[in-house]
Length: 282
Length: 134
Image 1 (spheres, each protein chain N blue to C red):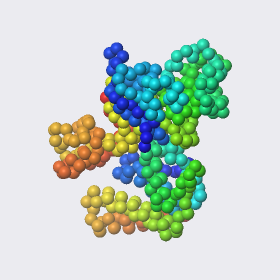
Image 2: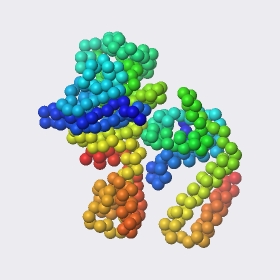
Image 3: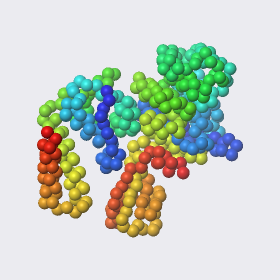
Image 4: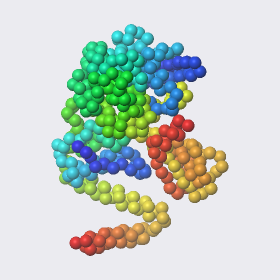
């Protein structure tokens, strides 16, 4: 499959913080969740994709267009929802809709109006007067209605109530089903990650520590309880040990080792995705 | 359409295979009739909280085995499944469940004869309970 977004050895230093080098491809038809602790570089990563932060080294390609080139050649393919948009405060929702819709030739007015109605977005209020939740709903409507191939969403559901979160997830799923599209979503919300993502791209201290397919990741983490006395040195795949319990990050290797060395485990258990993420971010 | 698929992550059976087997059962039992539309790969992935990679794999295997078919631009639909294949699916399902029980019995070091005794006991107590109800 041909990547829609490609990063090649991209690096950025901002004061003490350094991001990268990052090399990663994002393919059409997929949803990738960017996960990482606060300050791990997710927002900088998003801004760099949009060339709002210029990388010190390396290249970013959107639909084969180098983002260092004229933005007109690639920005039409990608709609970005930032956490904090700049310059929106003094405008009402309706005014923002008028501005933004003129920049995007494929603007989907019907979808915009539907979301405004479904989520009760107060379009006549000034952006600065809206609650955080209403601002986020408006941003979502303004982003998805651009009708692009790619969505880049930075924490799109953080301030939403539970039904609105569910609505956003369902709308994104519908949007993906309409044609060949792609989403990159930075999120701390476990529901976004569980219900939307195919891949998890894990950032830690400015480095991408890996991109994992969701089930492959879940199948590789496992807990085992042993009756036998365990060797004192760590066994292959071992991530953590508590008395007679071993948590493995490579179940296949751990099981192969145990079978080979006649170590029988009593029971085994699957590890919840939320817990796996916690281990990965440690 | 909402599909009553329940995944057990504790199972050693891979997720795609669990989906495949449960869909086969829903089709063989007639819960899903020929021509019924199935959810899109993306919708099913959301509902089951898994990736589209896994869901697609299950759909591809089901399609290769003649249980479902994808019509370009329209979606995925349940196929007409021949009777002998339906029968096969049913007996496979029962056998799978029995093999699981045999596996548990084996880990407790039961002998073959003891397993058969236990099985007979299970069958009898099932019917006794049923008769008690009616």
